[in-house]
Length: 329
Image (tube, rainbow, N blue to C red):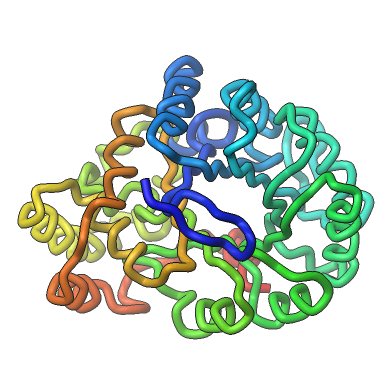
């Protein structure tokens, strides 16, 4: 494993997105086996992964509990990131809530479920349009003062929100969707983060599995899979989007690695301040993804990938109408 800096945090160059392992991930990407999820987390630590990403709303709650179980006795060298930002009632989320009161409630609960004294990186999961970002960040900064949180982050925030948040308290990382087929952050958000010294954490770096080459048609997805409702996976867009996968596969064959490793290596090549968090719930896919740190793409490889997937070329929005209303605020 190699390591990078997210602000003042040193982390493995690839982190692990824990969402598929329990809770919401089980509903989105097929069933997860508890024992295999624990084994996957333990294997990640063995491989030198130090950066683990979860959230209160994954489940809700059960994903944090799972991660807490796996890291017990191994806390010292790990960087644990979690997220808040939803109103949770009756076992589900009921809209966004980044009020100062909810910031504190969520933090206390996450600390207990994770079994730790301090959250290394605490993200606002989605911007709350009803609460000024200065109030939310102010409440988060008080958690830093109390030693309950070390660094602050945002997820899917727009440029103005990022500037206002960072002016209130230094922001260490921004987490947003970024991959070969979702490059919307490149025009404004990435340059802004670089100017402000904010690290960037791409989630869904494999296009929700599309870039792995393991999904060649919609019928490959299990019944009830979240991606069947993803506009990019729709019948009218699926075949169009397969074009980039063909190029990824060609480069993977030339390097004798998996398509997933090529997609992740492309992201790693976009900047030293970029730390993708591919999700996994099995050791086999974890090991494959983490091997991407050993893949070196040539200038010709990078040019070919850029040409195959220029910004804006992916067919379909990355969320449905409701989901798109919650990003870039």
